[in-house]
Length: 201
Image (tube, rainbow, N blue to C red; front, side, top):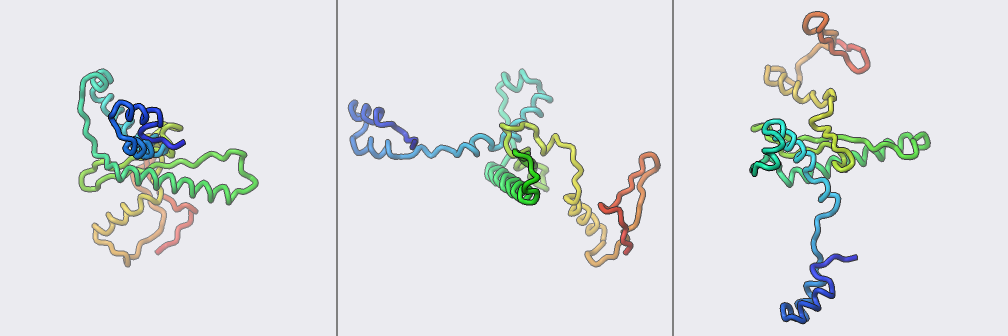
């Protein structure tokens, strides 16, 4: 059903008491409310709000947070947040479609939806502009952006490349792909390639 500002009964009553003319009542009752779509209404910024609430409770205690009349200002950018949530959902849906297509008949009846997270930070200030901790906060409140323990994998490469460029290396520099060890046993770190093969220069 179409939601409008006034149903026919309310419009008629306002005409009866002289608050509206007939044409005004018709125009108002035909106007949509313009409600926020349910998906956006249910999820926009929820992971971020929960994160801020947890930080405040840890620092000030629940009594002060909920009863102390605090004013809290955040660095969240509403436009960036909406775009981040949309991007993550679209990416996860695309990943799910590819996975289902790849495994076809071997898939379980109800395949588990892939999850992910997105965190947007202003590099100059460190301010959080957007935080998405999963596909839907109301189905899983676990905030993968700050609570999940995952190694960054290749997502860390741009940081390593930037450090190398700052140290004077260039894209044309020759590097050696050989076994290395950092630190002393038993805490030595020995990075390896995914396939365990070293390729030299």
